[in-house]
Amino acid sequence: MKTNVFYLLIILFLGACQDSPKTEKKDAEEPPVTSAVEMDKTNETSKEAQKALKKITPLSSEELLPYLPKLVNGHKRANQYAYPGGGQMATGGYGPADNQYNFSIEDGAGTKAIVKNFAVSYKMRHKGPQDTEYIFLERDSYETIAFLQPKISRNQISFIYNNRFRLSLEGPDKADDLWSYIDFENLKKLDQLK
Image (cartoon, rainbow, N blue to C red; front, side, top):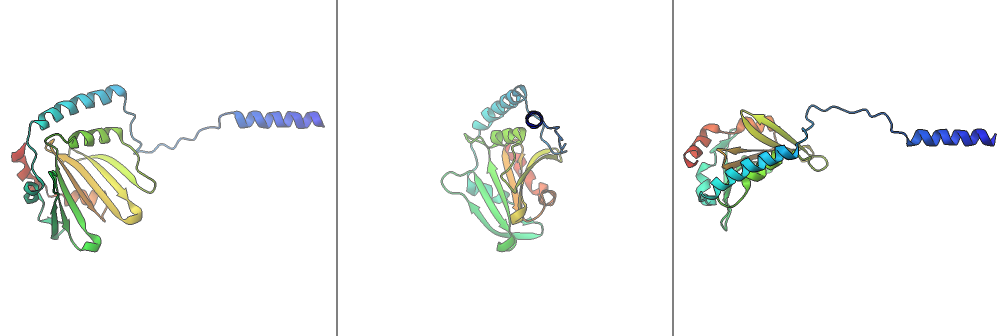
């Protein structure tokens, strides 16, 4: 009897030590593994772009204000803000304060690594904190990063325009809807600033 119990314990122990069969859930949105070689190529491209941007004098926050759209999803601009102290960013608020859309524009020229940081983030495809999600997707030939926060009904979509400007739109709607609100006709005004 003791021998049988001993053998049973050994079998249970060996069974517990073996790898359990893995059932991998293949997610269509699972990010591809980025190799060191791919990251090095990205870094070289980013270094060249960053070097060119460093030679350009960035627009001040006040100079960026005219490039904010007049409307977002049919809502007029309720407020605008130019960041003081040499900031290279301007933000506009659209719609009612309790459910507002926020459109931001940052100039990646000068010494700030706005464009480089976006490119690295897009390649790395990090996961967000609990109850949030990042979606990395090419939309209309633009690499976009959507940050989804379903618990608080706030989402944001960001992209680089003209290899210089980081544009973000935050609001209560889905990422695809936010993307459809981007006024590319208005953004053509930035084309002269390449």
